[in-house]
Image (cartoon, rainbow, N blue to C red; front, side):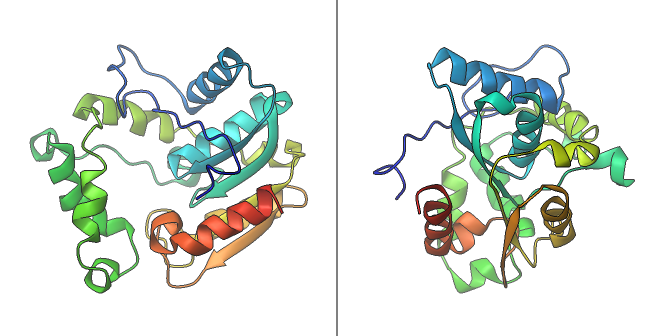
Length: 222
């Protein structure tokens, strides 16, 4: 539990969560600007920023676009480049395969991004995690817009500009963004350190929650 020590602000990214559907395309940089705008509207002069997966792409863009707002940076299961920049462009699932109900969609796809056998070892968690997605209003079209933004993500040449303390947390069995992605960030950001979670997939905060909270607490608070 970090809320006893920190004020935590969570963001629904464009097309996801409880937000309205977007009408046009956008970039990872646009979503970083959204985060900056939210902080300013809340009167927050500086913040620690934590981003996971695509949220990590946004956090990296935030770090290079809005350094004056950044105190410390935590990057979880993410990379400095994706899509075209690494020769691995991807798209949304076929429209006919899209599952509109977010809980059922989570049940069908979630296990693919966790460490092998995680849900077998933790019966009941698949249903628990899937249920938490119930409020996600993303549509197939919205997912396609997010994928298009991801395919243009690339801040590899700007990592050296990040001058705040930076922690990378990455599972060594991450099937979505391989460990190399986190290692390359650690090599590119001056003074960054990386905590590798053995036997963990794409979701360290769910696969080893106690360790994750303690690592974040130690980094932010000491």
